[in-house]
Amino acid sequence: MPELPEVETLVQQLKRRLVGKRISSVEVLDRKVVDVKIKKILPTKVLKVWRRAKSIVIELEKGRFLLVHLRMTGHFHYLPKKQQSTQRIRESEKFLTARFHLNNGDLLTHNDIRRFGFIRLLDKKKIEVELAKLGPEPLSKEFTKKKFRGILNRRKKANIKTTLMDQHILAGVGNIYAQEALYHAGINPSRKIGSISPVEMNKIYVQLQKVLNSAIKHHGTTVDDYVHIEGTGGFQNYLAVYGRKKCPKKHVLKKVNLGGRGTYYCPKCQC
DNA sequence: TGATATGTTATCTT
DNA sequence: CAAGATAACATATC
Image 1 (cartoon, chains in turn blue, brown, orange):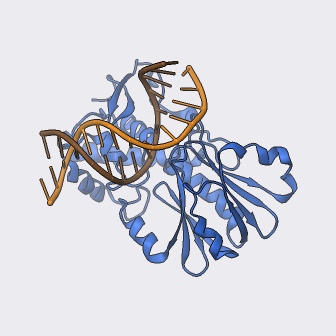
Image 2: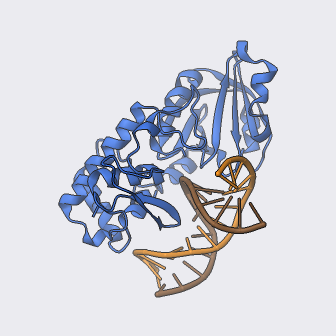
Image 3: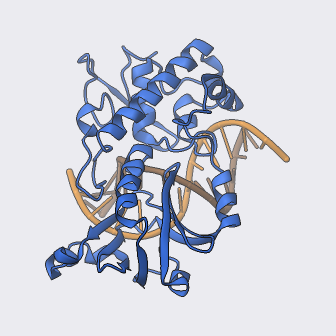
């Protein structure tokens, strides 16, 4: 599922392909997912593409922005003009939500099997309001250990794993990387924040950044169905606990349910 | 067939 | 009122 590293990968790839180009027309095939108002502002140039939490922001002309959230099953496909055989186009036809035609003849398509994601058109004020609801970016320079301990302490009675995944507390971490970071930090995911010492919090901070950076380097984790524009991620080969039976030290893992999500941990390495 | 998986949010409970 | 917990959303896969 796309979390911070997966979205970051996609953003880098979209940036290369879209920035400076013009969107000449858009076909909206699923109005629940894609805001049809996009059609009214065409043609428009793509000025910037960036990431905030698990969202993709595409900045257009005249202070307009596309806010894209892939949720679980959102995908982009990019078809350069030369590769637009009927077969390639048909690949993602079934769950297609929109086709973006670029001025150079290239085609960007978006599809979403579960239709949980969205592509919304917002003005500057509205997007600022939306993004302000999110917690700090875990990889930003301003995000210090001290700040991390500060935001955790706002949720003393909640468990650490669910809190790491709460987008209002911390932006971009989901079920995979919360579990991985906690394994490497040696912390049981069920621990209440109130029982976690400052030293342990620092450990989580370090491991969380480490695992996120490493996953970005490997272009994210592909389980089930995440794919970026250039193929699949590679971090699934480095997962310590998520979806596994044994930890790297060959201990048998346990699986519990936290916040309605499956959570793997090693009873020997994490306490 | 029914359980499971997923991110986010609306809504319920404490 | 707030913190925390849970159901709901859609659909494929096992």
